[in-house]
Each structure stands twice: as C-alpha cells, then as structure tokens.
Amino acid sequence: MKPVLEVKDVQKRFGGLWALKNISFMVGDAEVVGLIGPNGAGKTTCFNVVSGQLPPSSGEISFDGQSIVGLRPNRIVRLGLSRTFQATSVFPAASVLENVIRGAITRMNVSFLGSLLPTPGSAEAMERARERCMQLLHQVGIAHVHDHLAGALPYGYQRRLGVAIALASEPKVIMMDEPAAGLNPEESAAMGRLIRQIHESGQASVLIVEHDMRLVMGICDRIIVLDHGEQIAAGKPDEIKSNPQVIEAYLGAEAVH
Amino acid sequence: MRETSMVLDKSAPSDPARRSWTPLVLVIVACGAAAFVPSLLPNLFYVHIANLTLLSGIFALSLWIIYSVGQLSLGHAAFAGLGAYISALLALRLGVPPLLSLVISGLATATSAALLGAVILRLRGVYFVLVTFLFGQIFTLVALNWSDVTNGANGLISIPPMALFGLSFASRSSFFYFAFAMFILVLLLTWALNRSMFGRAFHSIQQNIDLAESCGIDTSRFQIVAFAIGSGIAGVGGAMMAHYIRYISPDTFTFQNSVAFITMIVVGGRSLYWGALVGALFLTPLPELLRDFAGMQHILYGAVMIVVLRFLPGGLISLASLVKPNRG
Image 1 (cartoon, chains in turn yellow, purple):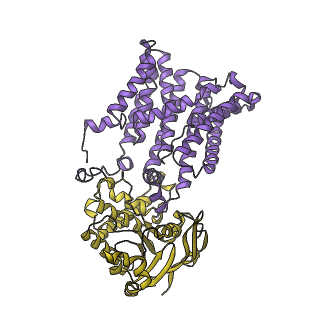
Image 2 (cartoon, rainbow over the protein chains, first blue to last red):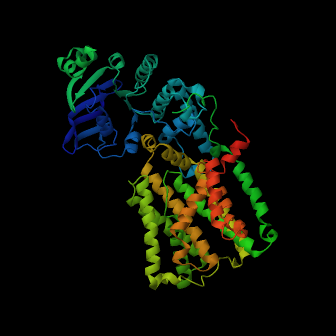
Image 3 (tube, chains in turn orange, blue):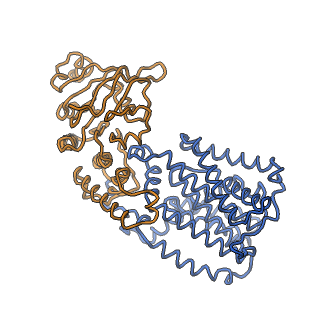
C-alpha cells in the first residue's frame, strides 16, 4: 500500500509535559485508520499537530511525499489533507449550500480579483462549484435543507454538514475528530456508513479519532492505540481487541462496566 | 444551538447581499437625487452637514470592511488622520496636485496598515483592538510633537482645495458633488468586494476563523488585505476632509472619532454594509437636528442611541425585516 500520510517519530511537549512521545504511523491510499485511546491519551493533540494547528516539537510529517511540518493549516488543506472538528463547526449565518461552497473555495476555478467584476466565465465556474457542492450534500444526506441557515440545523445535521465542508476541498485524506460524538446510536451508525462510503467510493482515505468503540471496530481497516502520549499498539481491529496492553489501558476499563 | 428546531422551517435568505442587483438600482436613483441636493437645501450649513455625512459614510463603510473579517479597529480615525496629513503635506510642501496627493495618501495609508497588520497578524480579538487603540494614540502624539513637519497643536492651515482637471471643489456646494462621487465609488467597491470571492472569504473568517482556515482560506492574509483596504479608504476620506475643511490638527482625528465610527456601524447594523451607511446617515446629522435643545443635545444624542440599541439590537437596518418578516 502506498503511504499518503506518514508520521515519523513525532513528539509534542507542552512545558514539562510530553503530550506525544515518538508517534509513528501512516495512512495509505484508500483505507480507514482509527486513532483511539483513553481520555488524555493525546489523540486530539496528535490531530492538531498533523493538521498544522500546533507545530510538533520534533519529528517528521509528510504528505504525498512532501514534508508538511511548519506549514499553516490552510496550506496543508490545499495539499489534500482536510479535517473536521470535534464540536460542531459550521458557518452559522450562511446557508447550508454556501457553507459547502466555502469549503470548496480553494478548488474553484474563480480568481479572486476576477470575481470583483463578474464575467460569464466566473459565473459558469461558480455554477459548476454549486452543482458539485449539491452532490456532496446529497452524499451526506442533507440536500433537502440546502437553503436553510447552517446555524439553525439540528446537531446531527450540523455534524454531517461538517463532513461535507471537509469533503468539498477534495481531500486525499480526511481526518475526523470524533465524528460520532453526541450522536444517538442510529445517527452514529449512519455516520459509520457515511465514513465507509467515503472510503469505498475511493473519494478519500479516512483517519478518525473516536470514542465510540463499536463504530471504530466496525469501520476501521487498521487501528492505532495511544495511551499517555505513547503509541502502545497498532493493527487490525481483531488484533487490537485481543491485545492485552490495550485491554489494560483502555478496553479493560470499559469491560468492567 | 438554542431554538435550533424551532427556526428550522424558516429557510435562509440565500445570501441576498451576494446576488441581488437592487443596490445598484438604488445607487443610480440616489445619483439622480443627489444632483439636486445642494440647490434644495435651505442654506450652506445644511450642505456642510451633507458633506460631513458623506465623509462619515466613507469612514463607516471602510471600517465595516475591516469588521467583516471579524476585527474591530479602534485606530480608524488615526488612519484617516494619517491620510489627511500625508495629502496636506504633499500639497502644501511639494505642490502636488490634490487629486494625486489623495491617491498617494490612500496607497501610503493602506501600506502602513498592511505593515501594522503583518506585525500584529497573530493578535485576535481584544489584542487587535488594543494595538489599534495604541496606534491611534501614537499617531496623535506624533502629530502633536513632530512640529517641524506637522506644525504641532497649531495644525496645518491653508491646505489647497480639491481640484480635478481644472475644476475646483472649493465651495461647499461643489465639494458635495465630489464627496458624493467618492462616496458612491467606495459604496460600489464595498458592494463588489462583498459579493466577490473576497466577501466569501471575509465572511467565512468572521463567522468561524478556525473552520475558514480548514477550508484552505489563508485567514491571516485576508485579514491583512481587509485591514489594508479599509484603512486605505479611511486615509482617502481623511485626505478629502483635509482638502475640504482646509485645516487639520491632531484634534481633527481623535480616539473619539474612532469610537463614533464604531457607533455608526453598531447603531446602523453590523450584519450588512448597508448598516454602516444607515448609521452614518442617521448619526452624523443627529447632533445638528438636536441643536434646538441646547444643553440637552448630547444627553438626547446618547438617549437616542440607547433606545435604538435597546429595541433594535441588530441596528436600524433590522427595521426592514420587522416591516416585512419572512421574505424567504
């Protein structure tokens, strides 16, 4: 498998606290990788380092064979690595469709200066972008509310809209920070199907951070387990389920309940 | 997230600012009406108020451009003052024709805003507000103390009037046409910016800067661009003021003026650029209209503002949606 995203020996220190210690993993072409671990294991820090929000203290991160350490998040997105946020994150005062169009802004064939004076060419490019964004809304299942204000959508819909916005930038890898957080079991299952479908249609590889074990075990090809900033295991869901270290650190605690 | 399901059935007015051409029609109507304004007003004092209102409109609109990337500048009057001093000094000391000095001062102000913006790039929210406030204070101090150039507290006098291809805009009535033309230019620029990809990027940043960055929008760059455009226009407005009043001093562009411009945006309505316009149109002549209540003038001015904000938190432009709710 060809690696698209490669993380090598990444460390992140906040003062005296090692939030990440020697993290190494890769996400290949067309796979779903899960990043799990108990609270405070460093999953979200790992996400923020990879997406450029936080600089790593040391280590190497490459995307498509190119180092992305030190690039601002917007550059990393343009290379094809997009992300969704843990909480709902939409543009509340814009329509749902406009939200997705904003996600597609870097892939539109419209020049900024040219758009000051609308030309037939830019109108046509705009129309194409609009159509493509509508397709994305169909894909995530909220096309029927495309003209509603994003801020007025119910929680579950906002989560789906977040995915559509991230897909609009035509990523090679999409990173999802707890896509099922706050969703009920049915919504969570639907989100799982959506993630599988993104992957199976060859649209993008997926890297997810998730607490919902059923979701992770059900949809991931491979799983990486973090605990106290360290990578304690990596492998297929079945291997992870039976890994004693993982059971001790994470699943064991859950199995008690 | 409050009341989400309740408002769900109400569809969004799909970005009216972006698609509607009505502003353009209104502008053409306004141009027609403006031709008669100076001759219709009872005396020159009213023409003067009209001119000041147009200048306020330019300042408020340009401040709105900065606000549209989620930044609040407390140094807007200082940038206007910078433009005014540059243009006045070019005209007085070097004999540069006022129109050219106007252009130069706009570019120079925009450049200094871009430089300041690049330095304070990572300052969000209250820190940005503080730095722009300090910039305003520094401007006032420099204008006061660098007397060799600025003539200190005495200010600069006998600034040549605005002239365009031999046409002089020295009188109040003739300046009205120049100010109106410039105002319309700024309005059209704001309108075009707002409906272009710039507007799309600006509003994304204002509504959710982290998500905007994740959409691949270079948020720092666009914040600097908006800050430079807005401050540059303020510089041009300040220069116009200098060639109109023909006298400027450090007192002409103070912190109070910056606050007044912010008040215009808030009272008019922050959500659309029309709000800035309405605010300038409402608040600039207001003290003059209250002149009959000598002594009470400023109290009434404050009271009117409180009443507007109490009952119309969205500003005066929200009156429109009260009149015709549910346009979707």
